[in-house]
Amino acid sequence: MSHISLRRLALAGLTALLPVIASAATPFVFNGKTFTDQKAYVDSGARCTTVQPSALEQLLLAAKEQSFAAQEAAKGRDVYLPTGGVIPVYWHVITNTSGQGAPTTTQINNQIAVLNAAYASGGFSFNLVQTTTTANNSWYTCTGGTCESEMKNALRQGGPGTLNIYSNNMAGGLLGWATFPSSYASQPKLDGVVILYSSVPGGTAAPYNLGDTGTHEVGHWLGLYHTFQGGCNGSGDSVSDTAAERSPAYGCPTGRNSCRNKPGLDPITNFMDYTDDSCMNTFSAGQNTRMNAQFVQYRSTP
Image (cartoon, rainbow, N blue to C red; front, top):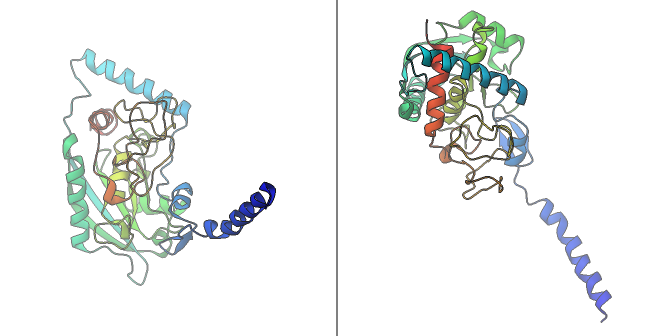
């Protein structure tokens, strides 16, 4: 048999395998919505819909923060000291009119415990002040927009340093979103964190049901960007001790190195990546420093 015939047979064999390879992806079903696989879910943006700043906005915010730090230093105050503080929490349970979608009291308390464990290294702790329950079909599946404004205007409590958590059954496979400290002054009533109710510890939103959606979104509320912010270029997440990351990770891909021209492996165990809850366990020292500085600048009561 000629080399050409052998080559044709080999190509035919590969072609026959293609449908098998193409069908190898495992569908990822999350909260009633089906994605091609988990990567498709992560790429869809549903993992976290917090509105991230553009590169220019990030630079402008950084300049503002550096100026504030310099002004405080002139007064003898170091905004970067890890002083932390106790953050009062108001939890707003949103159910439908049939009463579905309410985390149990134990699950809510366990979520607060998850936050306290995650943020202890930065000096922050969380004190649950009150839990409210509201039945509203529109708010129950809210993914932002008018329903978010109505919900938060009706329910939000406290000032800039008070954390308001809203749990609902957001549509579209979404997991959560948050507001940044820098937006409080212009939109105080929208301030807070919204999470899928089944993402709390013991919920049904596997592999995101150990409470770290809450940890991730509170990280944004305290001023952290995603670890993959800006990809392999620019100022990244504005934290020097988190390695650059080209794109969000998913699952728990040990040894991932998506920015080979930059030092360090991808920070897949960091709470501000997109890995599974079982993989997340870390805030870096630099992130703790940034959260403290952001809290002093934007969330401390004058």
